[in-house]
Image 1: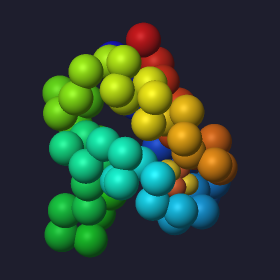
Image 2 (image 1 turned 90 degrees about the horizontal axis):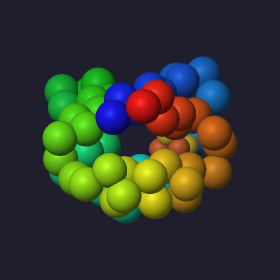
Image 3 (image 1 turned 120 degrees about the vertical axis):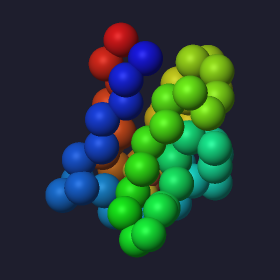
Image 4 (image 1 turned 90 degrees about the vertical axis):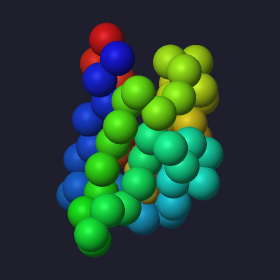
Length: 59
Ligand code: SF4
Protein backbone atom coordinates (compact mmCIF):
# COMPACT_ATOMS: atom_id res chain seq x y z
CA UNK A 1 0.00 0.00 0.00
CA UNK A 2 1.13 3.53 -0.77
CA UNK A 3 -0.44 6.65 0.72
CA UNK A 4 0.10 10.05 -0.81
CA UNK A 5 -0.38 13.40 0.89
CA UNK A 6 -1.27 16.67 -0.80
CA UNK A 7 0.18 19.41 1.36
CA UNK A 8 -1.87 22.10 -0.32
CA UNK A 9 -5.12 20.28 0.45
CA UNK A 10 -4.31 19.32 4.06
CA UNK A 11 -6.03 21.50 6.63
CA UNK A 12 -3.90 20.14 9.50
CA UNK A 13 -6.82 18.70 11.36
CA UNK A 14 -4.51 16.03 12.79
CA UNK A 15 -6.87 13.08 12.32
CA UNK A 16 -4.16 11.06 10.63
CA UNK A 17 -1.52 11.45 13.35
CA UNK A 18 -4.15 10.77 16.03
CA UNK A 19 -5.60 7.75 14.25
CA UNK A 20 -2.38 6.01 13.21
CA UNK A 21 0.56 7.63 14.98
CA UNK A 22 2.97 4.94 13.80
CA UNK A 23 2.14 5.70 10.18
CA UNK A 24 1.53 9.44 10.05
CA UNK A 25 4.23 11.37 11.86
CA UNK A 26 6.00 14.66 11.96
CA UNK A 27 9.77 14.14 11.92
CA UNK A 28 12.02 17.18 12.18
CA UNK A 29 9.13 19.36 11.12
CA UNK A 30 8.31 17.31 8.04
CA UNK A 31 5.23 15.15 7.57
CA UNK A 32 6.20 11.53 7.04
CA UNK A 33 4.09 8.55 6.01
CA UNK A 34 5.36 5.09 6.99
CA UNK A 35 2.95 2.59 5.50
CA UNK A 36 4.64 -0.26 7.40
CA UNK A 37 3.50 1.19 10.73
CA UNK A 38 -0.01 -0.32 10.72
CA UNK A 39 -2.19 -2.82 8.91
CA UNK A 40 -3.74 -1.88 5.59
CA UNK A 41 -7.18 -1.99 7.23
CA UNK A 42 -6.12 0.47 9.93
CA UNK A 43 -4.54 2.80 7.39
CA UNK A 44 -7.70 2.71 5.26
CA UNK A 45 -9.81 3.55 8.33
CA UNK A 46 -7.54 6.44 9.27
CA UNK A 47 -7.41 7.83 5.75
CA UNK A 48 -11.22 7.73 5.75
CA UNK A 49 -11.16 10.09 8.75
CA UNK A 50 -9.20 12.76 6.90
CA UNK A 51 -11.65 15.64 6.48
CA UNK A 52 -9.85 17.38 3.62
CA UNK A 53 -9.17 14.57 1.17
CA UNK A 54 -5.44 15.28 1.30
CA UNK A 55 -4.62 11.61 1.83
CA UNK A 56 -5.03 9.20 -1.04
CA UNK A 57 -4.44 5.46 -1.11
CA UNK A 58 -2.66 4.02 -4.11
CA UNK A 59 -2.71 0.24 -4.01
S1 SF4 B 1 -6.14 14.08 8.57
FE1 SF4 B 1 -5.98 14.97 6.53
S2 SF4 B 1 -6.32 17.14 6.82
FE2 SF4 B 1 -5.87 16.28 8.81
S3 SF4 B 1 -3.65 16.55 9.07
FE3 SF4 B 1 -3.99 14.51 8.22
S4 SF4 B 1 -3.83 14.83 6.01
FE4 SF4 B 1 -4.13 16.82 6.90
